[in-house]
Image (cartoon, rainbow over all chains, first blue to last red; front, side):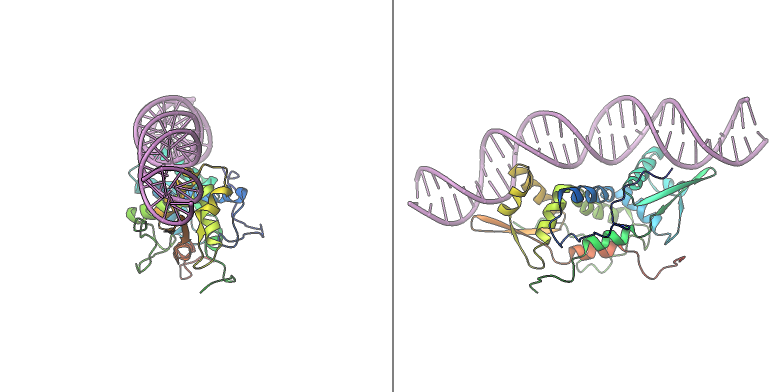
Length: 124
Length: 124
DNA sequence: GGCCTGTATTGATGTTCGTTGATGCAAGCT
DNA sequence: AGCTTGCATCAACGAACATCAATACAGGCC
């Protein structure tokens, strides 16, 4: 049930130049855009937030997520799949239920990418 | 030429609960999704990166941005408009040319929203 | 004034995305 | 085995989006 996500946001990839460090090349821009696109939907943002609120190592059962929305169960399942394909979350089936969690470090790496580098020819 | 952007990511809005602090309410999720959606396109990410690379207070003329892409001028103009409406950048016309810059603090606030809060019932 | 250059807007088109009902699959239970 | 529950996948449809050619607008220059 795993093994489908992208591996975009660094992990061991030492690279990780910030957005403001230098103009993004086409390839890296395309990869990162997939992640931000996954975040670019209110339902997915809420889903991710609900999962992330469980803290490090925390998990949420799908059965807790679905009833929080005025949407059909397939729709929620679809959004969870997109978040997973973006490399933000992962899941595991345990018995009848499926549990989701936030992949450790991803959000912090994304944040690091956004914040402007301290060392810069700053004008201020 | 300004005065059209959203005011989403805090500024003086003291609020700014992180994504992992608590489940996002519908309204805030919708607002934030607009920003991430603006970032969810490779062209816009590259545009923003090119502008942000100029550092604090830096500006870029549209005439420098357009030729960096294999896209028509109206398309670039359209993407810049979306970035502006998302509250990420602003612009000003000076004579014949239009200059864009990154709104100060926006990226840092976005990053702060993504990073998990330190104070938490962390399991690790 | 008229012309030229740089940028934004409009209208149209092909593609992608969000949503749903129907269906399929996995696991527990009797 | 058969039934039931939880979740994923499929097929289809309407809405939103990215793109372009054509056009409009703004400012400098003659």
